[in-house]
Structure formats: structure tokens, C-alpha cells
Length: 523
Image (cartoon, rainbow, N blue to C red; front, side):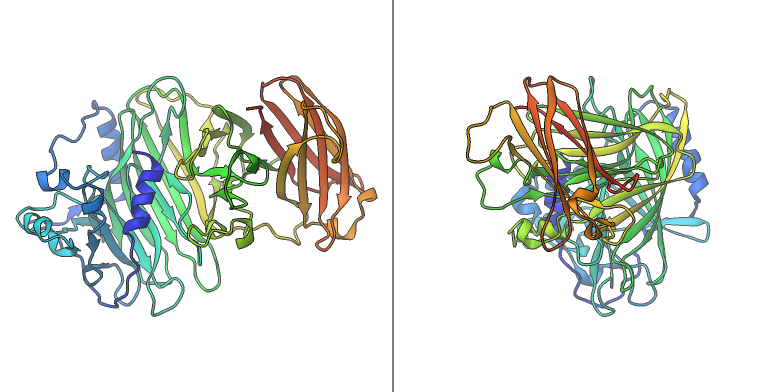
């Protein structure tokens, strides 16, 4: 099951709450509260990691296994059965039903005062819109739910809005104020796009605390996989009238069952089909189609890098070494509707996702994976932190980070100008025949001090490495209207091996812009 399948299903199922009814959690019968704490959950997952992995043994009831796309999409959680996590009009839980792609039950608990009680869901919590399915469901006990979302009055005090959804494996995604669902995060990636099988651990249990709206909501999760287990703590601080972003503080504790070829921490997943850089490959009226257009990397050295994303002809892998990085994220910088012209998908509203490590992460690298994609339903972009440490069976590790979702647009008055656009095409001069091996790369920088400068006040520093190529020409032009600067690079490339481009603008003895990075390979 791919992330896009999971999230596409979620998009089709999600319906905004339209009721103010408060429904307290329904606890499972004959269950007394059990002791609970994050440390106790962590120790339980540590103990579980010492035992061999056991897949879910209990099969789903036949009616759940028989649900297909058409019957599953008819099922909706009842708004009047939403589970209230606040005494007033605040946080609510809406569950996602088991079936179709979602065959593994997730257990849910309410945690309070050092104990936890299971939250029970039944067929009465859903509208099936199919009498035959509804009759069969009424005769069984739900073994759990597929996942859930948390809603709250993010935009207005009398309106419920979706904030975050957990559904499928360890995937989750959130919204800033006014955003539309786009990229997603995961609890972990293990051996992604390397030799050997990839492990897809899943969140199997969630423990949710109560909280009043206006205060952060805390939830915990148990992670289970063939190669590791984990205990997660999420402190959710939703967007509000004063802050557009929704912010998590995440504590991830991992316990390793097996040796790990490559561990991926704080993974982000997104989609990039095309933009101005590679639009010629697609016969589509829309100028751009992507959930994210770049990887932002602040390695903590004083340099901020922007790696423009790619839809390569073959699998692309890039590693960016760092020690205790300050931030990395998959960002959506193009925020104008005219950049996409898609009133249905609203790519202009897709959130950026930014990871800010907390504490000592040590040495490692941010890995960027770019998978060839032909459709916008293909999630082909993955970014995550790869620790230098190679974890062995019996090891454990903890990582803390802040994860923000929202526009996260660069500050136009910031000290450093940012990369505003990346374009590409046939190199050389228009109006004459040029060598087919000549490729043009055009980078627009905006903000910072550029509006106060002229083109002759700045110089470009541009390098090309890898493959069989060289830069033969570069120029800087001041753009009209917005004061941005355009860097144009012509490179002669004589092979299909990937090349790496790096460029920035300098003036007055200092770097004026982010460092633009790009990988290009001939089709």
C-alpha cells in the first residue's frame, strides 16, 4: 500500500464536522484503567523488540475483508458520534473504518492521571449507506479502527476543521490554517530504496490525552515492525488566528530487532511531477503539478541550501552530510494559483513540512530520494535524516524534533535572498541553432538586499560536478517589478551521467542568497 493510496483514500473519506455535539469516549466494557506513562510504553516496546516479529494473527471478519473501494468510500463516521477530548467545543476524534486497503486494526486509548482505558468503537459510530453492509456490521464487534483524525475549531470558534490524520502504516499528515492536504510524514523508514526489502512499520496503538482548545494536545503511539519497535510522543499545537502553522513536538524512541542497513528518521513524503524546470515532458495545460518544489536544508554552518526537486528518468539519490542540522524540509514555495491553474487539486494550498531537530543528532546526512513518476498520484519524493550510526539488534535510539506544517514562506525581508524559481531548457541563444548538448538553467533569487542592488553589484558563483560537462556561460540580470535577480547558466553536457549544479550570488564580500542545488540527467 503506497502513501498516495492511503492519503487518496483519506481525502475521499474525510468530511468536515458540522455539529457541536459533545460525545464522551465510549470505553470498552469490563475494562479497568491500566497504568500508563510514556516511559512505561517505551519499556514495553523495548521488551517487544527483544522477541521475534509476529504479524497480526486474527483475520478480519468477512464483511470487512469484502469491502472494496466503492463500498468503503460510502462509509462515513457519524459527526454526532465524534469523540470529544475537551470539556467545551474543542478537540474531537473521528475514526476511520477498517476495510479495503486498511486491513490492520489500530487500538485507541484515552490516557489520564497515569492510566489508560481503551476507547471502543462500534458500527453505530458510522453511517454505511448500504443496508446489506450495515446489517452485517451490526452483528459483529469491530476489532478496532483503521486510524483517526483530530478536528478542532482552527479557523473559527464555531466551526470544526481537520488538523491531523493518522491512517495507514506510520503515515500522518496535518494542515496549517487554510491549507489543503498534500505531503505526509512517517514514524520511520527502514532500508528505503536500497537492496533488500523495505520494512514498513506501523502505528498499532494510540493513547490520547484530553485537552482544552487553545492548549496543546498530547498523544502517544506504539510503533511495530519487522526490524524495530518504537514509542512516540506527539505534542500537537494547532494553527490559530495568530499562527498559520500547525506544529508538533515529536519524541521518537526506537528499539531495534535486527541490524538496520539504513535508518530513516523524521521521514517526509511528497509528490513532484513537473514545474517550469521540466514541463516540456508533460502535455498538460497546468503550468506546474507538485506538492513540494524543493528541499530546504539548514546544516547549521551558516549556509542555507535549496535543492530544487526533480522527476528524474531513473532513480535519484542524494545525500547531504551534516552534524546537528538546524532544519530540513520539503517545501512548497510557489503559492500563486496561477502557478498551477488547478481549482480542484489546489496545489497552491499544499503545506510545506519542516523538521527542526532538538537536542544532539550527531553526524549523519539528509537523504533525498527522487523516484521517476508519470502521474500525479505517484508519491515520488522522500526526505529523511540518516544517522551515521549503524544500528544493531538490541540497540536503541531517541530523536526529538519539531515538525511544522503550513505555508512556511520565506521572509522577503530576511537577511538572505531565497530561491524563488528554477527553470530549464535548451541552452544557447534564441533565434539561432544551438548545440544539442547545451542546456540552460535559470534561477530566480528574491528578497534579502537584492531589491536595493543592480546586476553589476553582484557576482555569481556557479560550479558543475559529475558527469561529462562544464559551465560555458553565466549571467545575472535584474528583473523588473519585484527587484529579483535572475541567474542564467549554460552548461555543455556530453553524457547521460547525472551532473550536480551549485550556485549563489555574492556582493560586498558576502553571500547574498541561499545556495541553489540541482541534479540533472539526460533522459
